[in-house]
Structures are given as C-alpha cells and as structure tokens.
Image 1 (cartoon, one colour):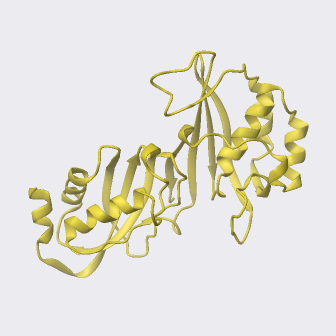
Image 2: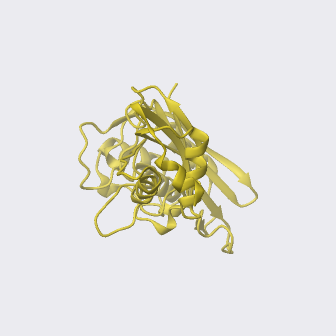
Length: 260
C-alpha cells in the first residue's frame, strides 16, 4: 500500500499534464468509454487514479475502443498537481490496476497535449486464425475463419481504401459525426504464420466499427462470397446495409497512436 500512501504528498502549485501509454485485454469490459451500468476501462483507470491522488481524476483517451477490443498502445492524458514522479505514478497505478490493464509508459508532457486532439494517426491490427481447427490459446485474440481465404482479392480491396475516402458504408448505424471521410495512410495484409493473417490499418481517424466492418466485408471477398468489384461498389454506395458482417471485437487491437 506504500504506493497509495505516497500519493498524498504535497502538491505542485500548478497543474501537470501526464501522458500514459496503456495496454489492456478488452474482454472483460464494455469498451473504453465510461457508461452507466457497464464496466469500462476508463472507469477503472479513473477510479484507481482517484485512489492514488485522493480526488477525482478525469482522463482523455486517443479514442474509444469497442466492447471486447484490445489495446497495446492506447494513449491517455490527465491533469494533476501531485509531486509524484512519473515513474512513481506508473508504478503506483500498476499496483492498483487489475491484471488485464497495464501502464507501459508515463511521461510529463506540454500542457497543450491532448491524447485525442493532438493525434495525427492511429494504427489498428486485426488478427485472423485461418484453419479448420480452433485454437485454445488464440481464441480470445483472433477471429477463427475456417474457410480457406484467397489473399490477393483481399489485398486488392485494401488498395481501394487507401487515401482520402468516404467510409460511410462501413460506419456503424446511429453514429453521429460531422464527416465520414478519413485519410487511410496504410491498409495491408500480412501472412504472419502458416495459418495466421494480420490486417493493418493506419488512418487519421476511424469511424465507429469501421475497421471491423471493413474486415468483415473483405473476408467475405476472400471466401469468394463477394468480388472485388462488389467491394468497390459497396464503398462508393455509402450504404452500410450493402456491406458485409461486422468482424468480432476480440480480433482487433489498437496498436499505437502517432503524434509526430
């Protein structure tokens, strides 16, 4: 409990801005964002910071992750007047967090830094296990697709979404955004093992369920249920109803956030 007790040390006269890089297993949570009646990652982190500092602390994240989605490099920032060093903050917070959330890095940053509004791009990965037999070890971290997937048609689909694109056809219904155009900087497919595939997406922003809807539709192309021409037509249509299934959340990882 020493890490908790030291949090009550005298405070700085001015606020400090602390940036954290956080890793989490999203299976036990209803996404990042705090919400009534459901446990979220934001709620857990804020409550543990409250214990450390003896007062309510609000955190900003680079973006929301959906229920069940994982992160290797979620970025958050918060304001504090504590005298604790960043290493002490990281150590103390990790001692209070549950085993499925971990702080990988803590830094003091300029007051103007905001985890969401300062971000230039974010990188997501989607992992697929492509074989007949399921996996006891990977079942919570990859989508098990039994059908043999053709890689080249899927790569052709990925080529079509690079650049400034209207992704409204792959946005979850009911979303409220000012614009559905995003700049896709990278969209790639890698064969990372004899039966494992990895999709990588980097963009200046993502719509709700965008990566999962893109992946679900592209996998249908890989199965031969749709063609690359179908995919291009769906993309231009702007109609979510024409697109394919939403890939499961547990195959998706927020890998990193880039600030330049």
